[in-house]
Image 1 (cartoon, one colour):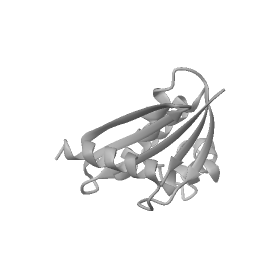
Image 2 (image 1 turned 180 degrees about the vertical axis):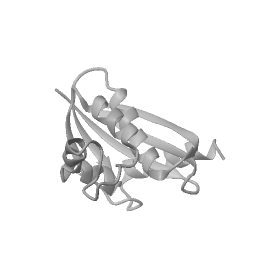
Image 3 (image 1 turned 90 degrees about the vertical axis):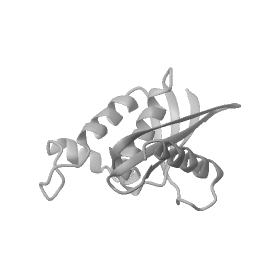
Length: 145
Protein backbone atom coordinates (compact mmCIF):
# COMPACT_ATOMS: atom_id res chain seq x y z
CA UNK A 1 0.00 0.00 0.00
CA UNK A 2 1.18 3.46 -0.82
CA UNK A 3 1.74 5.59 2.26
CA UNK A 4 0.05 8.99 2.11
CA UNK A 5 0.69 11.71 4.68
CA UNK A 6 -2.30 14.04 5.06
CA UNK A 7 -2.66 17.28 7.02
CA UNK A 8 -6.15 18.73 7.32
CA UNK A 9 -7.73 21.80 8.87
CA UNK A 10 -10.98 23.68 8.98
CA UNK A 11 -11.76 27.35 9.58
CA UNK A 12 -14.91 29.28 10.27
CA UNK A 13 -15.57 33.01 10.56
CA UNK A 14 -18.25 32.89 13.20
CA UNK A 15 -19.54 29.52 14.28
CA UNK A 16 -21.78 29.10 12.35
CA UNK A 17 -20.65 31.34 9.53
CA UNK A 18 -18.62 31.26 6.34
CA UNK A 19 -16.15 28.40 6.51
CA UNK A 20 -13.36 26.71 4.66
CA UNK A 21 -11.32 23.55 4.73
CA UNK A 22 -7.84 22.68 3.53
CA UNK A 23 -5.84 19.52 3.05
CA UNK A 24 -2.26 18.76 2.06
CA UNK A 25 -1.56 15.24 0.76
CA UNK A 26 1.94 13.87 0.26
CA UNK A 27 3.00 10.54 -1.23
CA UNK A 28 6.70 10.19 -1.96
CA UNK A 29 7.71 13.29 -3.90
CA UNK A 30 4.13 14.07 -4.91
CA UNK A 31 2.17 16.78 -3.15
CA UNK A 32 -1.44 17.83 -3.66
CA UNK A 33 -3.35 20.66 -2.02
CA UNK A 34 -7.14 20.78 -1.78
CA UNK A 35 -9.54 23.35 -0.38
CA UNK A 36 -13.14 24.43 -0.43
CA UNK A 37 -15.79 26.02 1.70
CA UNK A 38 -19.39 26.86 2.42
CA UNK A 39 -21.31 30.06 3.09
CA UNK A 40 -22.97 28.90 6.33
CA UNK A 41 -21.28 26.14 8.28
CA UNK A 42 -19.39 25.30 11.47
CA UNK A 43 -15.75 24.72 12.28
CA UNK A 44 -16.37 21.03 13.07
CA UNK A 45 -18.08 20.49 9.71
CA UNK A 46 -15.12 22.07 7.92
CA UNK A 47 -12.63 19.94 9.88
CA UNK A 48 -14.59 16.86 8.85
CA UNK A 49 -14.98 17.96 5.23
CA UNK A 50 -11.18 18.36 4.95
CA UNK A 51 -10.66 14.72 5.96
CA UNK A 52 -13.44 13.47 3.68
CA UNK A 53 -12.19 15.33 0.62
CA UNK A 54 -8.60 14.23 1.22
CA UNK A 55 -9.70 10.58 1.37
CA UNK A 56 -11.95 10.94 -1.69
CA UNK A 57 -8.98 12.29 -3.66
CA UNK A 58 -7.12 8.95 -3.30
CA UNK A 59 -7.46 6.75 -6.38
CA UNK A 60 -6.52 3.40 -4.80
CA UNK A 61 -6.29 1.84 -1.33
CA UNK A 62 -3.57 3.51 0.73
CA UNK A 63 -2.05 3.59 4.18
CA UNK A 64 -3.10 7.10 5.19
CA UNK A 65 -1.60 8.99 8.10
CA UNK A 66 -4.08 11.76 8.84
CA UNK A 67 -2.77 14.63 10.94
CA UNK A 68 -5.44 16.89 12.42
CA UNK A 69 -5.72 19.44 15.21
CA UNK A 70 -9.37 18.43 15.70
CA UNK A 71 -9.59 16.57 19.00
CA UNK A 72 -13.14 15.54 18.06
CA UNK A 73 -12.05 13.70 14.90
CA UNK A 74 -8.95 12.13 16.42
CA UNK A 75 -10.76 11.00 19.57
CA UNK A 76 -13.74 9.67 17.61
CA UNK A 77 -11.43 7.09 16.05
CA UNK A 78 -8.52 6.63 18.46
CA UNK A 79 -10.84 6.39 21.48
CA UNK A 80 -13.42 4.42 19.49
CA UNK A 81 -16.27 6.85 20.16
CA UNK A 82 -17.52 6.11 16.66
CA UNK A 83 -18.09 2.46 17.59
CA UNK A 84 -20.43 3.47 20.40
CA UNK A 85 -22.26 5.94 18.18
CA UNK A 86 -22.86 3.24 15.58
CA UNK A 87 -24.07 0.73 18.18
CA UNK A 88 -26.49 3.27 19.62
CA UNK A 89 -27.85 4.37 16.23
CA UNK A 90 -25.90 7.66 16.06
CA UNK A 91 -26.60 8.58 19.65
CA UNK A 92 -23.97 9.64 22.18
CA UNK A 93 -23.63 8.00 25.59
CA UNK A 94 -25.98 10.67 26.99
CA UNK A 95 -28.61 9.53 24.44
CA UNK A 96 -28.41 12.83 22.51
CA UNK A 97 -27.96 12.65 18.73
CA UNK A 98 -24.42 12.78 17.37
CA UNK A 99 -23.89 16.13 15.67
CA UNK A 100 -22.97 16.01 11.99
CA UNK A 101 -23.91 12.34 11.61
CA UNK A 102 -24.23 12.94 7.87
CA UNK A 103 -20.53 13.80 7.64
CA UNK A 104 -19.47 10.99 9.98
CA UNK A 105 -21.26 8.55 7.66
CA UNK A 106 -19.60 10.10 4.62
CA UNK A 107 -16.20 9.92 6.35
CA UNK A 108 -16.66 6.23 7.18
CA UNK A 109 -17.53 5.54 3.56
CA UNK A 110 -14.47 7.49 2.34
CA UNK A 111 -12.26 5.49 4.74
CA UNK A 112 -13.54 2.16 3.45
CA UNK A 113 -10.61 0.89 1.39
CA UNK A 114 -7.81 2.53 3.34
CA UNK A 115 -5.72 1.75 6.39
CA UNK A 116 -5.78 4.89 8.51
CA UNK A 117 -3.65 6.18 11.36
CA UNK A 118 -5.12 9.15 13.21
CA UNK A 119 -2.48 11.58 14.51
CA UNK A 120 -3.30 14.55 16.74
CA UNK A 121 -1.25 17.68 16.14
CA UNK A 122 -1.32 20.93 18.07
CA UNK A 123 -2.83 23.71 15.97
CA UNK A 124 -0.88 26.88 15.26
CA UNK A 125 2.30 25.40 16.67
CA UNK A 126 4.59 25.88 13.69
CA UNK A 127 4.11 22.47 12.04
CA UNK A 128 4.67 23.47 8.42
CA UNK A 129 2.07 21.29 6.69
CA UNK A 130 -0.54 21.92 9.37
CA UNK A 131 0.02 25.65 8.99
CA UNK A 132 -0.37 25.27 5.21
CA UNK A 133 -3.67 23.38 5.64
CA UNK A 134 -4.83 26.20 7.93
CA UNK A 135 -3.92 28.87 5.36
CA UNK A 136 -5.83 26.95 2.68
CA UNK A 137 -8.88 26.71 4.95
CA UNK A 138 -8.81 30.38 5.92
CA UNK A 139 -8.41 31.48 2.27
CA UNK A 140 -11.34 29.27 1.24
CA UNK A 141 -13.52 30.71 4.04
CA UNK A 142 -12.70 34.25 2.87
CA UNK A 143 -14.37 33.51 -0.48
CA UNK A 144 -17.69 32.99 1.31
CA UNK A 145 -17.69 36.18 3.43
